[in-house]
Amino acid sequence: MVGIANAAQGDFVLPFLLRAASEHAGEPGVSAVVLAAVMMERRRAEIALGETSYKLIDAQERERRRIARELHDDIGQ
Image (cartoon, rainbow, N blue to C red; front, side, top):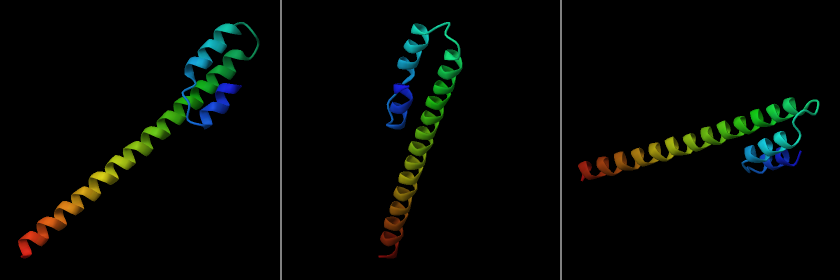
């Protein structure tokens, strides 16, 4: 499926999958394939969210350390 290949590139494929499901409704195995692809898309989105959350927390921690260093240096002078 083209949509599944695009998921590896970070494209949002759910609209493609829903359109494909409606075009091929009733064909054997289509529902299972579409469900698997939707589950893969959801997992990809969860991973992206986790990575973004990690980056945000890391940036906050670096900023906290920077401010603490500045405050420590100002108090020491």
